[in-house]
Structures are given as C-alpha cells and as structure tokens.
Image: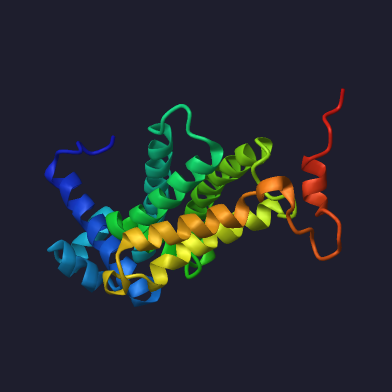
Length: 226
C-alpha cells in the first residue's frame, strides 16, 4: 500500500528526492554522493536506505520523474493553446516550455537531461523509455507541420527532431542567468527552430546534396493508396 502523501514518511521521501534532484542537476551522476543528498534533505545518510534500496535506485527515480514532469508540462502548455494555433506556433510553444522548465523550474528535468548519457544500463531503461515517449510527442508536432505543408522538403524528419531536441537539451549545459536572460535564449531558439524547419516562401528549399529528396521524405510525400 502506498504511503499517504501527507504522512511524515511520504514527506521525508519527497524531501530526499528533491535533494537528490538538486545535487544531481549540479554535480552529475558520478559526483553525487548520498552524504550530499542527506545533507540537503536534512536527514541522516543511513535513513535514505529506508526509502531507497540503493543510490542508483534513488537516481533512477529522479531521472524518470524529470522526464515525466517535462512531458506533462509541455503537453499541458500545448493543450492550453487556442484552438486556432498553427503547427509552427505549437512548435514555438513547445520550444519555450521545454527551455523554461528545464532551465528555470525543475531540478528533476535538469538532472535528467544533464545525466542521460552517464547512467549505467541497469538503471537507464525506465528513464530512456520515458524519454522515448517525450520524443514521440515531438514527432507528432513535426508530422502535423509536415502534413500542413509547412516543413522544408529537404529535411529528414528523424534527424530534424533529434537535432532540435539535442540543441534544446544542450542549453542545460551552458546557460545560466549570468549569460543573459532566458527570454533571449527562448527567442533565439524559437527563431532557429522555426527558420530551420519551415519551408521558404514559394517553396524553393535547397535539395539534399545528392540533388534528390531523402528517401524517408520521399516515402512520407508519396500519394496515399486508393
């Protein structure tokens, strides 16, 4: 039976998770010690083992939660947009939501993004599966724009999606308030993503180096079977 969320035990467990997210977001997987987490959570280090079987069990919970929270946040922002918001406007909104949440709002998401490549395989499966679901949401955003005829035809959709997400995630590695306001970061990212993805006026996009449309794009633009 799950603990009552309002119980002392549940509050202590949450405090440990919050502390672990904070430490992970700053020190990384290899630099995070349970002693640091215990200090931040204001508990004795051995008490952590009452709630988590190991350091990696705690880290996995933080990493998984970070992606879940990010996906829920971005999904909520998109759901709140006016019904007439176009596909590119929805991508703009997702860019802003992703950046603000990972850079300003959630230690969990910052920790998840910064440590995704550091986890041993034994604890990476659940966070990776959640990250895949978040990627599916972005795939839908790009597909909607493509179906509306708004994307450049020389882009590979998978590569485009991965590069957009890679650029957004990398901001967690270099940005801090001393480098300028997050508003500037958001506007810059929105401009780069929109102008990198959107078809040019008149439809005169550059073709791939080979002079032909990428096969994946050729397939997605093939007329539907009748």
